[in-house]
Image (cartoon, one colour):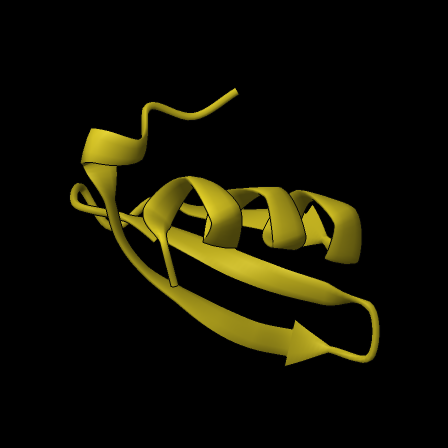
Length: 44
């Protein structure tokens, strides 16, 4: 779980995963399903 208020950006990582980069520069790897859910929450 991630507090969406702390997300700075989302980046493509590789074929089936993305990086969530937080405001404190922590990088979290998420799969395509997690990325899809984040996009919905962030209205992207």
